[in-house]
Length: 259
Figure (cartoon, rainbow, N blue to C red):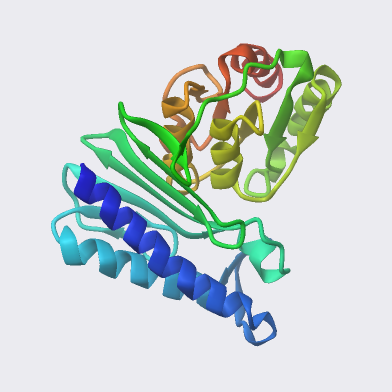
């Protein structure tokens, strides 16, 4: 497992160098719209190529599921790659973006790296060994639900659910001390693991958006489920990740409006 973590860290570092290079010359950046309000840039594509190359140099038989290029191979080991989570932030010069790499073995998440180059934070988790940020062990918050700071993401891929989502948003807003929308699910989950946020919910996500963040939260002592309270988050794209003090109450509200 140590080699898997080392390769994920190396891949994230190489990808971050690419992103920082492009970030320094955003006016030259070519941007394409994959779907309404869903963008991809040269930086996304080059970052992903470098991550895939780095993985395949050490683990040519491992399967890869990448945001821009799709699936590569099959097998017991599977890497979920988001080469630039928070593309819209990146395009507009906001520093809330990251490289996210999650690794599963026989369907179970076992390793995670989330690297936010401009924030100078690298999050790492290994199944059964804890979660860390820049080498410091992470633990989810212990604040009560009514004092919680909760993160979310707007359902731009599920706009038919907007009215229900807004009702959910309103009830959470009235129940906790604050809500934030940062624009990167991987970082929202990483900051939940760190205890900055007390919880996070979002819908219609892809596995590469959340695979690494799920393991970070769980290894920091948090709880992660789908909207039904189960573990189909990678297939459904619906996720509630939070501290034990927040998860149950947050899930109840989500279930009242979004299931």
